[in-house]
Length: 160
Image (cartoon, rainbow, N blue to C red; front, top):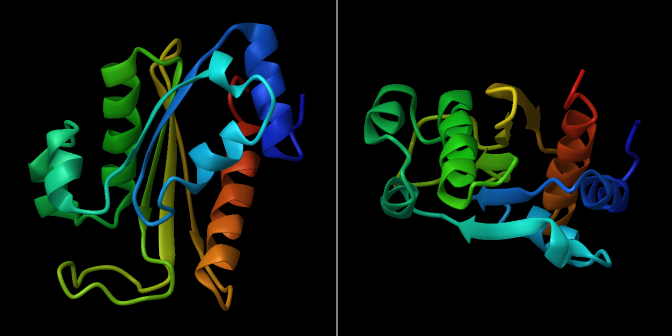
């Protein structure tokens, strides 16, 4: 089944009795918020964490060596975020999002100022689906929507 929006994903997870949890940084919980805008979301959303700071990513279980080695803005960090949130909640799918929405971060100088990394961890198959995008929107909301759209596109690859 191909999903065109978050509502399709939520409805499919409900039917399949699967759960999801998110650990989002630059998107500030936008994916989780959009999930909760869909009827029945409480059946599938286990937990959501907004971890803007490295400190709270680490408190949620992200390996500090991954952040130190690859930077907080990396595929490796997004993968660890997705796995750790799945482990923390026992959710079938964990989502990790990190990056910059067209703005510099004086505390983390590495990485492009408009690059975002997304990872979905599939617990049943011990599999990561990852992607990245360069945001081009003029506002934070537009850039968050671009990330959500990329998440929906990436979720279409779950179970392939």
